[in-house]
Length: 209
Image (tube, helix red, strand yellow):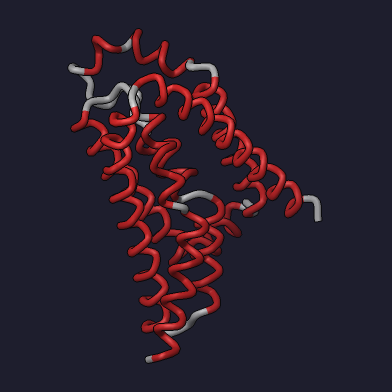
């Protein structure tokens, strides 16, 4: 039993560092600015649900799937980094704000306008190269139903914490005000760009070894 507790704690810490729920929350608040409260809640729930499904698939079949497709985790990391960098540019230069204003009249008719739940929140922010690699590695190292379920339980706990963080992000940003939110969004865009570049560098290091 003690070994399972140790495994749960170590897996919990690993997923917390890689997924980073506190870090995802303000980025989500910036990406979903302009959406209604109901839309933000819906996108948050959908993002966590989709990322959970993705991580479960990779936990159970990921290594065989990537090998079968001839895709390395390094290549996956590079692709995710490029996509995140494009999103970061839009956050810094407020291109998303202008596009939201142009589509404002469509929001009521189409609740999926500017939906960030699938991309970039579910993937690659939550179920990104780091979390996918982590769950695949932890599952590969721990054989037996009890140990595998322990890893999945730790992952589920962090994903639940991520959902709570995303749901609380909007009200917190509203309290800060529009001007402060704009400044924070730009700052987070810069940080997101740096994170994206790091994804690409890590991927290149793996591919070029």
